[in-house]
Amino acid sequence: MKSDTGMITVNVMNSGQDGVYINSARLSGAEVSVIQSPDQTQGQIAPGTNVTYVYKVRSEASDGIYYLRFILDFREGGGYSFTIPVEVESSNLKISVLEAPDPIIQGVKGDFLIMIGNPRPNAASAVTVTPEGDGFLVTPSGVFLGTLVPDGSSVVTFNVTTLRQTFIRIRANFKNGINPHTATLTIPLTPVENKLAAEPVLTNIRVTTEQGAIHVSGDVTNTGLEAARSVTVTPQGDVTPVDPYKVSIVGSLDPNDVASFDVTFRSKASIGEVPLLITWKDRAGNILTTTSTVEVSSQVLSDQGTEPSRFTNLLVWMFVIVIAALFIYFWRRG
Image: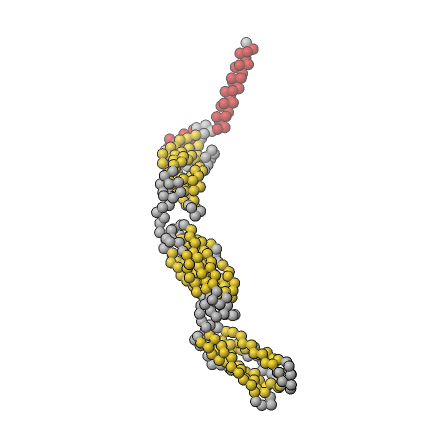
């Protein structure tokens, strides 16, 4: 690739019967320049032996085939030379989208199948693929592919939850020889509202006091067109959930299904309303929530403070039983 560096290795073997004394070994070129040469020391190549010369070069030209000349000078005069072809080829890795959610629904997971192709005449090594950007959640955070052979490809899958209108950039880092390179593809993410989504709604709300706690009961109705799974109702705000209904586990609700719920809590503050958090999962496993506010009257708050607790009720019943037992005992004794 243009501006890349590479190594050229020249192996010189003496196949003759006599030793050859080398004065210098040079590599030269125009479009591909030599930036580092081996030490030039005079020496002999004995019969049947070889000497290796390693040069570091850099491509300065556009794509094409260029020729370097290797020149070997003999001490006694004369020499030997030949040309070395060098190809400059700047094709980058290709990134394409094979599959994507259509439409992209806000807050819902969707799989993007991404293909990484290598159109180059040589292998691309240390290939990694990473999604970049914000406004979405993605797994995995990156994939290591290793080596892509010439004309080879590999497919990776990213699971993306789009939170708002944004874009995701797919970056493929790789090496061409010893040179790092990168290829990118930007994919716009324009989510739409899921008009078929489940919509749990609380109705028939009743607020009472029970065992020194506020008891809220009612119905949960799924007014959406998809099922709501693992539905729960939990009191929020400046309250303390207490038994027996700290959390109301409703379960699954198909469209138009109705189920009852009960939550109990205590509050030390003078509150006029309590938010109830409804949590459920869609078919992709995404956790969704909504909040419904329930009014709490001052009378209910007052009753909560004056109504006896379970422990108090237990003591009262124990006292009644003891009095009754004493009455029966003395009555029998006459």
